Image (cartoon, rainbow, N blue to C red; front, side, top):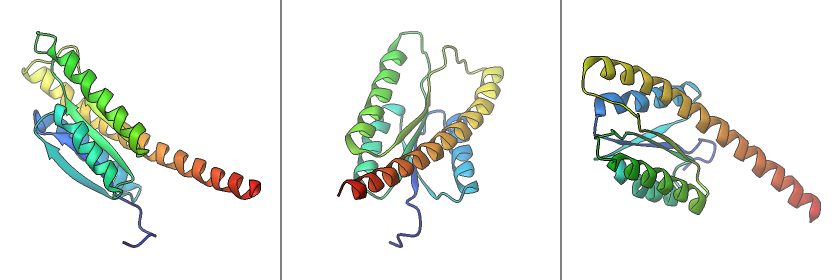
Length: 159
């Protein structure tokens, strides 16, 4: 692989509520491409499957970062709290264990109903969140590059 080309950013998304979640995926990819950062998309059935895929992608060494996108709906039985907690904890573990930045646009709204008003609101909201997660990814990658460059200079000075 040509080292002058940046590593792509993996975007892993749940297919559950694809019409809404896809808005974050498309917005994140568009924002990253606007800044000439390549992306590669992966889909999984639900949010619970995202951390394992993020781990495999991060461990592969082929991606600069991983972005997760999904929607966890409050079904009224409190399961959503456990699912969202497990997913976010899993994503943080992947990031800390691999050193590859992992970002979350896995959202757990307090209220989501299938009626048109909520659908329209979350459809637009996920666009906003996709842009935000892409910008957080870009800023973090730049910050890590600066840390690496600073650390290299420090090591050279010490040696």
